[in-house]
Length: 317
Image (cartoon, rainbow, N blue to C red; front, side):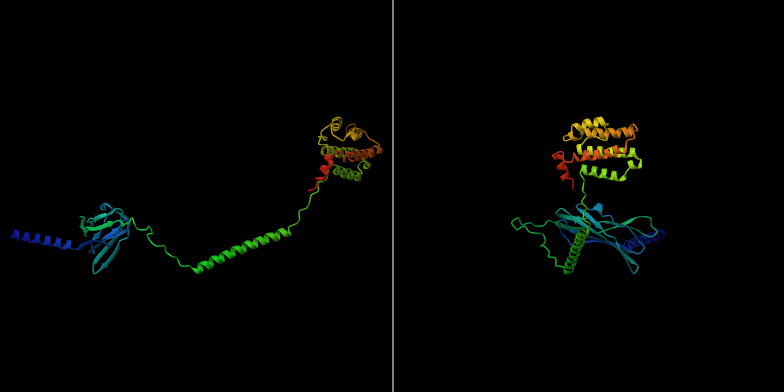
């Protein structure tokens, strides 16, 4: 009796296991069975199962020998009448021509309140990857014929409008520049006076100041000698401002056209030195004579040589 009871319990257990095994089914498929090298192979695994089962995504990468996984899409889950299904989609590709078998892929799952991991296998699928047949005698041509793109007149009109706006802006700024240039103030010509004219103007201005008549005798003699020394520097290119009277006269002797002013220059500079350094107080006639000598020195060397005339002709900018 006891043995019979154990037999009944064991039978019920086996039947329950078989019943539970029918609660999940897996199926694999491809979109077609023949592909060209490099084509996308759309591979799908669909799992139908009882709602209580926990399904784990299948790992196919290590199971593929001559195929590559291009993309793995997100699984799609559905539920209906207490049943559930999950669809896993992959994009594969093959780069060698051959008949390829995608092996059975295990799908792992776990029953409720069960710690043991179980699995169900997909069917294996055989596909053919082949190359494009090439006729070496055929004419070489594109894989696909050139595609004609229809004209989009709205885009053409838009670009024409943009071009007209750019041309208009260029013309506007060009006209603005031309008007600004036309209304610009003319450049004033700067007249550079020759050395003799500068000296004569300075002497005339000094005369009008009447310094020695006001008792500013030393200032008068300092100013008049400074005018003549600056004239020597510009006219004869010599450092007249830095030299004492004797050295200035000696250096002046070496310049062309100065013979006629050497004596006058020596007397002129000597009288000025007496006033500036020896505190000599000259008579009014001496002060007047200094002005006459200064004019004489300049006037006698205005047209001394061709170099001066050339310099005067070119001193207008």
